[in-house]
Image (cartoon, rainbow, N blue to C red; front, side, top):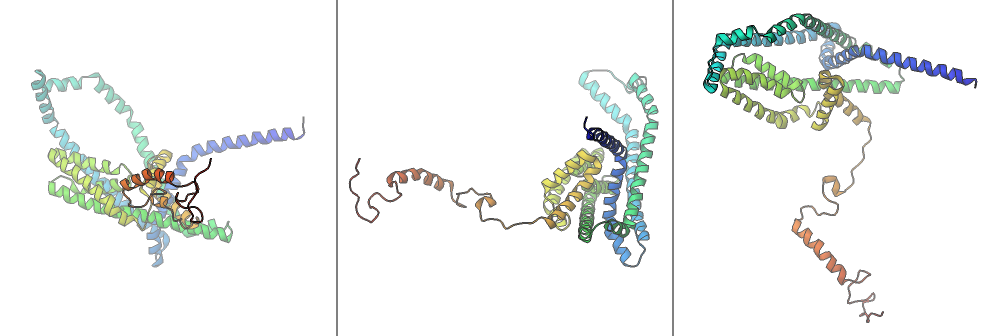
Length: 398
């Protein structure tokens, strides 16, 4: 046996053990890594506001705390408004439930010639087996729901804590990172950091402005129609439609439609029509002007990045996919060398030999006459009446 074989086997086993240990550690820490990534993008988003306040003489830690306090107050206010709206609608639905049940029973009796009563239906529902099983499962699932809520609160606290340190100690973090790199790499890291701050902050700025405009527009419509809880619904439509990519518009419009349907079914159609028309206005008029200077990426690239982010990290990936791709695109655009385009018609989507603006009938006539002209010419491409020196050609010889 060669002398190097035992050492190679030991090295291979050690590498395999390290790989398995690293895989296990990554699986255990994937949740923490995702939280850190979210906190990093959140810190990048508030970096412009913190830097502006810090440049005016305020301590960076205090500026970060004030920004987070404003964000927290806005989030709690939105949750309270939305919760009060949902609670009020649930109370109204419970109070109106007997009327709805009576109307359904009357329709069934008239359509199928039955003799049902609300008391019998209520008794059958209360004494049914599936209702008892549902109550038992709900009672046993209270602990799971409580655990999920506590886990979500702990995750939210972790994200806010990391983002606070990233934003408050941003300059110190950049100095610590650049201290282990050569000067040329330090400039590239600082440039990438600056691009990430600009793109992430610009993305949130443009989305926040579009959410404000969308909320105001839908609030005016809901007030005109007399739909209850118009402020909370307007805030819901503005935030959900802008910060949940791809399907946010449909999720945002579903709740106002449902509330408007309880007032008048025709109001739900009015809300649906307004949501569709406003979405087209936003896509073709408002969004290009607001995002042209902040996050200027192709819609297909944005859609693909959202799908990829969702596949990798779920809803979190969908939220941070667009600013991440915009940052990568801007960073690559600063270092990728570009060349002048050749003067080729195919660059503009035209055929290789096609004359621009030429009618189809003219091209067909040219292609039809081309073989006839070839038959009338000589093999050397000249006319049949003159030779090379202009003299008449003699008879052809075999």
